[in-house]
Amino acid sequence: MPSVAVVGCGLTKFGKTDKGLIELLAEAGLKAIDDAGLDGIQFDDVLVANMASGEFNGLSGIANALVGELSLEPAAAIKIENTSGSGGAAVYVGWQAIASGKSEYVLVVGGEKMSTKSSGETAEIIASLTHLEERVHGITLPSLAALSARQYMQFYGAPREALAKVAVKNHDNALLNPLAQFHKKITIEDVLNSPIVCDPLRLYDYCPITDGAAAVVLTTLENAKRLTDNPVVISGIGFATDYYSIQTRKRLDEFPAVRRAAEKAYRMAGKKPSDIHVVEVHDMATILEILQCEDLGFFSKGEGWKAVLEDKTALDGELPVNTSGGLKAKGHPIGATGVAQVAEIFMQLQERCGERQVDAKCGLTCNIGGYGNGVVVTILEVMRPC
Amino acid sequence: MLKAYRCKNCGTVFRPRRLRCINCKSREFEEITLNHGKLVSYTLIYATREGYQAPVKIGLAEFEQGVKFLAQLDCENPEIGMEVIAVNTVNKDNGNNLLILRKP
Ligand SMILES: [Zn+2]
Image 1 (spheres, chains in turn purple, blue):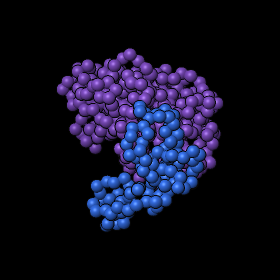
Image 2 (image 1 turned 90 degrees about the vertical axis):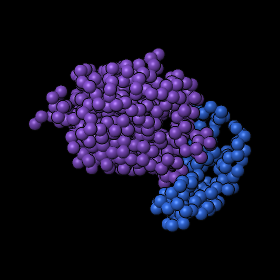
Image 3 (image 1 turned 90 degrees about the horizontal axis):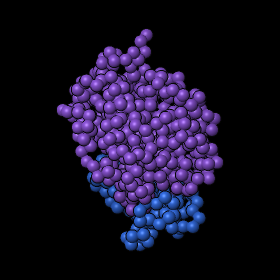
Image 4 (image 1 turned 180 degrees about the vertical axis):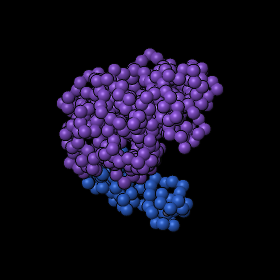
């Protein structure tokens, strides 16, 4: 089975833009192709991660549209949808395509253009991913994070400030990421004084509505060695689902699918949590970063909030988390996120992150679809010549 | 009435309904009624979806045999651990019948 390498990445600026979805996908895709130095290569597969091009943009067939924009015919073109885990799912499928030997060059592009709709309409579109028996009560995705936050704080005695600190840290990191949506330093007081979205969580606990796209190029390690001096391989990848209905789960302050996807990825890579040097997790809300860091095995259950207060997850901490600024401050163009996470770890491992660069040879991404439903965990490692 | 499903093969109780048992994949169930719940978590939604009036109160309650119910919560000062029941109401936002959580 061929080892699968990442050999290039490209991202658009994240935020609100006048550019259309296809334009964003094409911009990120072309940047990744150029970054890989593969302008003349015929790609086998073009995988486009996106949740709701129909609802946000009135578009279908977006993978074919992208192939057309970039003259990638006759590559296979497939849209991959796993809600906010679409990007991770597309990387998973791209990994399978190359590992199977079927494909040699795969372009994975994720993107979402969300600013076309009002926040109420956006909440409605996103809530369409929930179980109908729960949706009829008026739940939103942010409200599920609030249920998790209250249960976690009550059960483990976590202070509200610890959740706010996640937002402060991720805004600090985003200050060093030129492509991030927010370039604004905030304080714990700012978070605690921002408008309530879903009690006990407030506006600054949540990721914003974002337009943007991200892309990575996957190929075999053999090819990667010819293209670069320090190839980065996907040494572990795992995908796991959990109960579609939230009320079927045992607790809301844990994500069993994160644990299961991570177990698969760790086992495949022959790694344990202490081998990981840098992490991108799915901080749709501040509480989610804490829960995932626990379920990924970096901190004991109920202790993740202490790590945040002790700055262990800060840029200069023992395990930097969300160096890109995370969904919280880099932004969350739904389909782009899982791809952008892999791109950030790829750039960290290739020491291309400028002011936010950390010392890392092995990194991990955790991308969540639904509310903890379809989770993809990816482990990336740099293969420096010995 | 809040319903749950007990698997005729392995006895596992779950809800909402699915075609196969969550534990053993058997396809035969009997309906049971759940009566007593305790509030596990709750939230007040201020950033509501189109057509819902803020704040939408949502509760998650655990009923008999650990079975949970996520629903609108009609109660002034909710507290984790308080007793709740499921009652039928007409939804004020759209006129539909809705089973919600309330104090006994
Ligand atoms: Zn059964």
